View 1 (tube, rainbow, N blue to C red):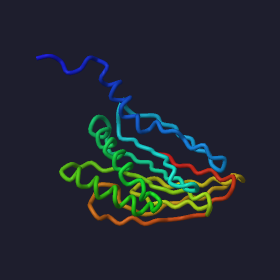
View 2 (tube, helix red, strand yellow):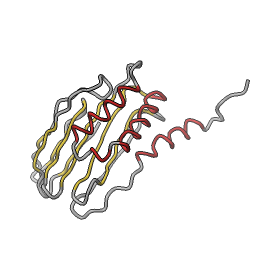
View 3 (cartoon, rainbow, N blue to C red):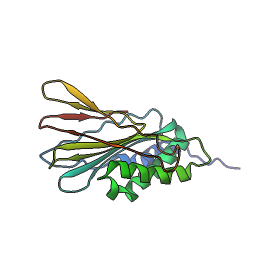
Length: 183
């Protein structure tokens, strides 16, 4: 029986898995986005997306599927598909998190996988940041004077159970603020 790999498969897997992470960042004079991704392994469970929702709103999702390797990478690819399917709901982060959670919970029902995530909307017109957390990190808002605030909301990680409740938290953002989200 022959081998199923030609030695290049790990690099191919990494390139394919990172495709959803290679998005064009918005060119908008009112806001600047930057991302930095350093994988733990060749493939894994990290996911981030920035989506222009309207002329004045940008959606952000940062997620980390439990574990490393092929299993986490496959769940991350599914998470990317769910992000695309429900992106119109991202303007309401708690609703978006609930929709993605329910779909992901159906898929991992017989597994122990889950994902931590934070879903957010930056509203440039109203100067508001709204988030819903699914066990994800807090948002740091760094002000031009060097002081900072944090914003978080309670919520179970994605795929722990169907019909989980997610709450939205909001804060004002000011000109010159930097929003920092990391996992």
